[in-house]
Image (cartoon, rainbow, N blue to C red):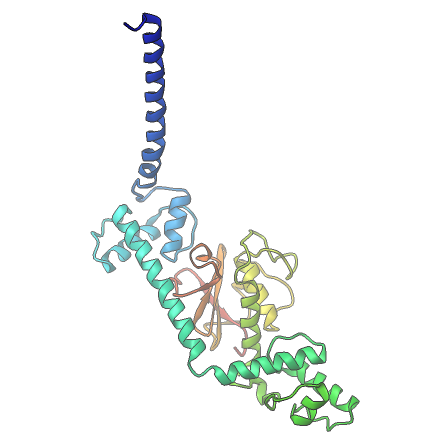
Length: 313
């Protein structure tokens, strides 16, 4: 026979264990339940902001009429009941759409890298080697600065100072087996006919900070920073293209340059956000959490934005 005191202690231990298991179960089950709570018009918070980013909207964390319309459009497009309520089915389809965009983006990048880019890549590598030998910034673009540096080197070595890097100049640089390089005329880039050097410099600048963190106000005091917000990012790229002397905020970018879309670069700005499109590809801080980069695979709605472009581009 078990003594009464021992039986009581055993019962208390059993009760305590049951309580502990109940608490653990509540955490294990309750957290996803909270996460699974449907979103609808009038909701606010981080989950609404995440939803807006997945829809390509300005992420203000408020489920208002614009977000409601975008949700219904998405639901209709994916054959979900278009009630504007974001439940488990809509979240699942949003994730599938995001993953599909990422896959298409990677496929396009691989195709672009592999199709007809061999010569261009070779010339770009050769230009970087040249620039390193000359002791100047190695950005792979044979622009005016590189041409001046080549001519200075040629004059010092007693070569014809024509700015053309042929076998004699390569030999003087101590490099063998490289293609003839020269600056293309009318500001166009060798290996990429019709593309202005300023545009290639803008792309190079965009690539340099594409994966930098986001910080509100980042890139405003100086072009050199450890994180950039939306207008700081656009300002940095315009600076790289040689089209901006000091950083601008979103409101100032609404009157930057010339009105309307550009041939190569277009800026979309309103008082709360700005982004740009370079050669058909969106460059935007919104969406970084999805792709890890400011380069985005798809365009976003542009209603409510002022459209500008750098003159000539």
